[in-house]
Image (cartoon, rainbow, N blue to C red; front, side, top):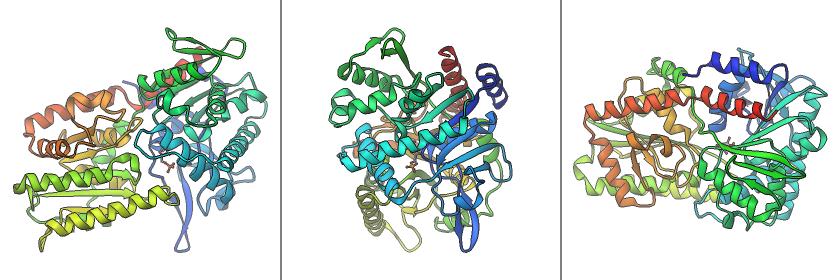
Length: 491
Ligand code: F6P
């Protein structure tokens, strides 16, 4: 099994004295003011869940957008601060953006163009020239920040996600000797979808500045290779999963299914969180005789299938009336990207559905759906996982979905059932031992909830044990080791 220590060894062996630099839009720790006090938040982000343990191990630098209203207060002259707060294990270098830049680059091109383009969730992407121009400018701001930070040192630059598609080529243009890689945390669509983007070639050229590109699953690698092959003058070596361009320079494209630190989550989940106010509140809202608790933990995003889940709960209660008053669905919804119209209307739709379903079924001492609209802390999320008989992950399309793996990692009692959408990357690894369903098929979804809550204990245990073995074997450290080892081969 890979561990923090074995990853440390791999990093020492493969990277040596070179600087280890991770670049992403989202920062792992956000400083903000709350009632006059400085507080630190950890954002609801799969990327942060995965990369924070990597950085803690590597003594590297993480370059990211400083988005908190107290972020400037805690940094040094070079915009750097040591994190995690109190542990000081690695450097976070913050990049500052104006509101205008954030609007065009983050809310605009990243999340209104690339996000819907890459996720097949039937949301139409927008194509706005000003936002595209801002996206280019902000990628250059990140490039300047990274180049300033590394000076003339050797470095291994590991870029995260779709906000920074142009950064690889910008870095390589100035420093062709750098080793540059990118992990794309979301799906890659088929070529027919991607080519509708007016700037598709510039995006692909930017990404081909990488020595290595990683996706969660093979299908996304194939989609990417086919997209490049159909729109650019390149030579594709499918055997080696490589694309050759610009006078023979190559980019390898491989799958690396991301994961979590199963051991750490397991240990943390064993602690007692019953004192926590949010947990106490939630428990108070459960009827005394409630037999079954299902939970969902999501950013409120239209790719997560939250309205579909609420409709399935409705159908489940209709179809299996003996579950009325015996079942509660607890939804944790962290508000996200709320300045984008689609996200606003999703929120309204969810509020309306919760209200309608609760009105339809609730009695004096029972409501079927409890919706907590906030970003819960890590201990709170663990406490909810532990209370649950079932965890529902119903994404319409998802690169991986780390909630599924976190839930499994937290269940050291070997109980609980994972109800998992077949359209998540996680379903490729966890399908045999979870209850798999299609979130678009509300009837089938309702039956899947029924199957999950009625599963007998020996079967639950057998399945959860097997799921835990899979997540233990393919943990976050193994993911990091595999990625770094592949990249080192290209040095
Ligand atoms: O996992 C995909 C991802 O887009 C990450 O890049 C991101 O951190 C996370 O979802 C949450 O989104 P955001 O950073 O926009 O809040």
